Amino acid sequence: MLATSAGCYGSYGAFNALHKWNGHATDNKVANSAIHFGLWVLPVYPLALLGDWVIFNNIEFITGNPVFR
Image (cartoon, rainbow, N blue to C red; front, side):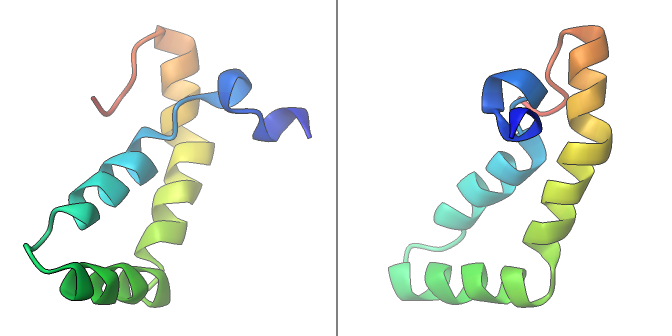
């Protein structure tokens, strides 16, 4: 439970940057939703979460600076 706490383990910058980009990928909400679904099916979102959890959040913890801004 403690490892999933946002304040304890980092900002999940890669996932949030991907999600922010996906929200503005096109001017069409339906197209953005299709892209969002596709990025879950192709495991882009899960890989971003894994990268955050294993690599980027640890770098952020050690350096004190977020990897993704």
